[in-house]
Length: 185
DNA sequence: AAGACGCTCAACCGCCATGTT
DNA sequence: CAACATGGCGGTTGAGCGTCT
Image 1 (tube, rainbow, N blue to C red):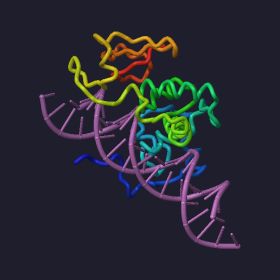
Image 2: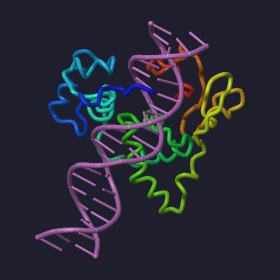
Image 3: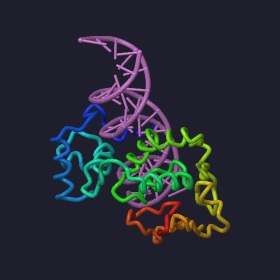
Image 4: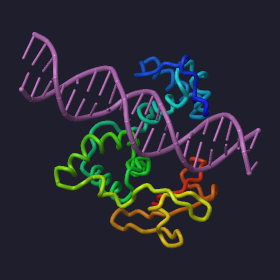
């Protein structure tokens, strides 16, 4: 049985107060993002590390763009969703200042309906459906493994290249991880 | 005026991938 | 190689608010 990420008796849940937000902002400004499990303790917050991370990424980060989505953003989301399916973090990565949660919510509350009103089934629309398979000993999602020999597939209308890499030293986004899918811009 | 209903979106949950020991 | 720790992701939930009847 997997351990819970934090002791639920010792943590607050629900909406964040202004004081909590400020504590988190102050701490991250001073020390930067780091060990999310350690941050709540260090910042004096009775919150789970995951909760702090989510709050920072989705609402407190200074580079976030708030407010309505523009027509160009909507169009991009439609195209990327058609291409990638519900890969919200990848889609959000192409929208500066937007988060995966924001894109996901916007899709579910606005864009889905738009498609339905046009007589398009939003679920059938995606080219990429998440189906895991194993290729070259790396578990990858089928749509991304389907390109012959994992050569990047070029999508000229979006100015995107989809490709796979499987080595940590090929990391290009600074996350330190070696994901199964890369968007080459 | 008030209750029912629907919508939005912040937050949580559980799972998976990756790194470390 | 296994077990564990951590970060990240997508799906889901539920509080709060506006609109309708």
